[in-house]
Length: 223
Image 1 (tube, rainbow, N blue to C red):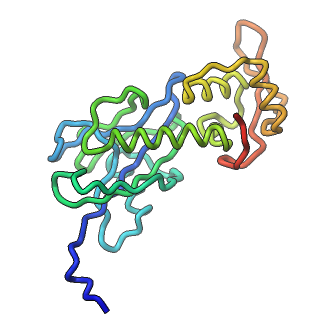
Image 2 (image 1 turned 45 degrees about the vertical axis):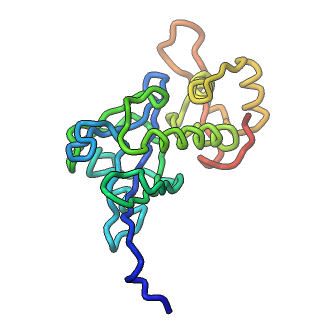
Image 3 (image 1 turned 180 degrees about the vertical axis):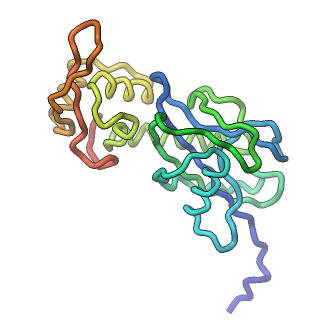
């Protein structure tokens, strides 16, 4: 049996990509680092995994410590292991991502962070380490999920208009959809149902409110 102590031990971190919709724009949650390297620079929330800590537990702990965000469902995204990705040594990072509603989320950064804020996911500031690469990968994953799953509904309230749903697809996929064809497709898939309620306070004809009748993230070929 090999003596495992003779092998170098790389360090392991977790990084978390949190997406949300703000004012009809896809946003990503970033933190301003208060420690070196890249002190004063923007980065994804994350940090080192403790020796006795589960990866997802570490991700949720770092997210809470650095942003104040908690109680979110995290999905493992990818592992990034370029030997030169971190100037401090051989660091392998496991990236996670999540989609959350912006309402009710109070940012409260504490550990090793001076600020946490939302930025355009497609036009973020310059990011530390290889976090631009991680964000780019997460965006591609999100776009794929919108085409083949019901994940878009994660951004919506329990009751929503079809215009709000269409706007999410257009914003994230960077394309326009014909209103009539989009609704025809959604109804044909039987993934929404009329709640019987309407959106009040509108100058023109009140819009019907719908709800998703599938499990969020369920596989459905939408586009």
